[in-house]
Image 1 (spheres, rainbow, N blue to C red):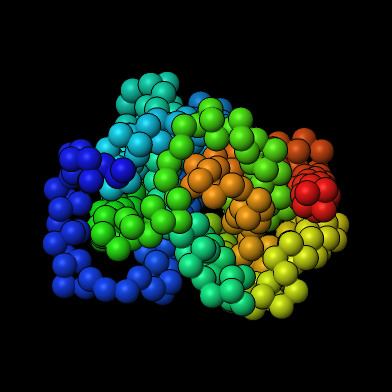
Image 2: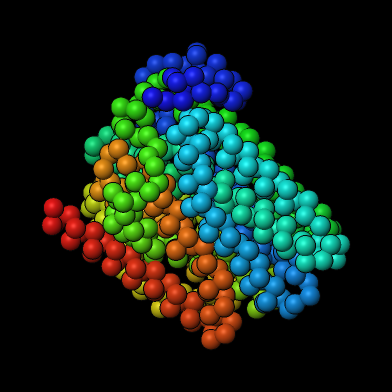
Length: 443
């Protein structure tokens, strides 16, 4: 029984969403779900990249001015990782809310927490104003973002996959992944524009805060767009008939722990490459070259456009060769790319452009099918919660500490060691896919 059916309280936003949908009742179509998925994921990744970019160009100077630039960036990346550590705890908390009050209430609380944590970062005083307390405030708000991201899982990606046409499942599987390059393109372009049109003093004084206000506004729009889908009677019934209901975390872990672990490690190659072409290269260029961040942010936005095209292409390829075959092939290609990627990044402006475009093409092909690579292994009644836990662990192991590790290795032992880190992710994916294949054959 859902919260709505049992008389559990609903938010005013839920009621507004239901009234909006009264004129649009009818057949549930995969295309409608896809729109909600893209809006939701783009808003989340915009938040993600706004914070990530600020971690490189703002926080080392604003929060950690008492150390050198490299150490300040490493401190900033350590706080960056807190959201990924907090995310599984958010899933535990918000799964309980989901089971008690319903999916709509969970989403409302989670996305308001995400929005308020994000916009509050824009008001953080500098170290010069309040000392080390500024770092503690930043860490607390980053944890708030992580908890909220754990609660923002709406199950729409799983619902989309289950309702996709049989021969187009690869195409529909890539749709949620479009949010990453779209969010990056908007965030990078916005920061590039602000940096290019403000003095360094004005940018560090107030200009960097503007993208966080934009992130809050986008979250509000995304919240209503997602609620409009998940609270309708048609979708509520579809979630129930597909058995996409929240289950207790410990029970889910006992039943699905092997598949969850494999699912968390299967996308390691794409998640490692994810940060190797977004956050890490920005930090390297900012710290070790004379190039300004605005130009490289524009290169990242261009790379994001290639990433969008590659993600779409991944759907076409997966429907013809199979998702796991495509993931294995791209993992092998990423392993090869790791051998010369550092040299490209260190080869000047042309090398940076080639690095970003080739990296985003590979990322799109791999990341486009990384979501739920082994989701079909889950028992149907545990799929909703298992997918949420798998996503949390995949981001924690594959992405949470990636910028910190890559920068620490590169600054200590040379840029080539960032390629070794990328190689380890590719190996992790290949091993996980091999184990998954053996498990499927043993059934």
